[in-house]
Image (cartoon, rainbow, N blue to C red):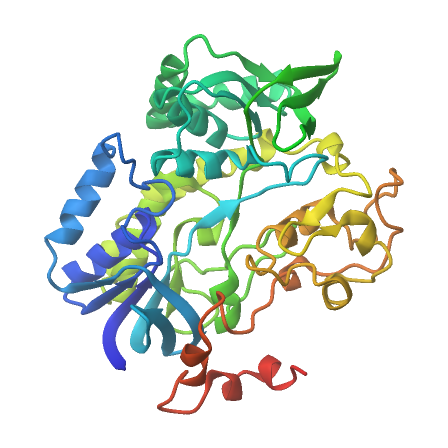
Length: 458
């Protein structure tokens, strides 16, 4: 099955919704693709027992009122090349041909290994928030929320609203850095109001700074968590531990299309020009894919990208000042929530790094780079396709020769591997049915035949 459109938008979070509506408003025939059953992305994920926030309701209503946007929910991208994307939808492979493409692929949580992190009951902070929104029973459970960044407050507020006993929020950043961050929020009043509102909803829940998770323990599931601070180690009995260290951009689809990524930190994002166009002609990117910036940035950039993709440059340029202001807030986050070295050193040699293939940190120490480790240990070859362990290994700089060997738990320094190659850019983007791959890009040959990397694959 083949379909043509003017603007194809991948991702139906805040950025993708804004892009689709903006492009359609300027006369473009739009197709919006998303892998979830409902639009909203992670930040506006449907809560079965709570109403959506006003901004989300408005975005959903605008989408529903636009008959010129074709929505393909529960559709998974299999492969892509300039001008065409192959998706799997309702058990059928579809080729989507586009004139312009907007990548609004969002971000995922950064999880870092520590002893006990694979025990049942230990999850990502955002992951537990998503589970609870979908009905996971949390009422009365004792939950410790830990890690770093504003996501911790949002996750804790959701858990608290659903009846969890949130024992504490443990932020690894020192108090001085948090004060410095808070003192700058006056420039973004909406963020200040949002933070104050979350703290009010969490009245009575301790917010502790300069403290981090060292280990979790239990027989069949977590029963105790070990946290550490400058004052020493403390053990807390709990039913759940929700740990998150911020977000990293989803770049796999951009990589497969050949888009350039930034490489100044372990977690690259899509490089775009002033028109939000990537290095590939007619391929735009917006929101977290361009660097973690939050929902406000995502909505503005989505609207800009949609306008540019539809040829409405004047309307897009009118949003530039708001976009720059939103991006200025995003620039504060890495400065004030930088991870301390103790978190990087938390994993010990027996600690499992790749949860899909059960690969420990010690099994990686004799390998020169990610590819060698992957071939010998199957690290990153499980169902998540390295999305979790790949980001963790990049953050820990396990294959980076510049990483100091200060802990025997980590491998001997070896030649560096660029972070931009940590994830495969080969199709499929997600695990998929063989039938979908067999029929890929049938109009001009199989995707693999057009992919140099695939041709060299043994």
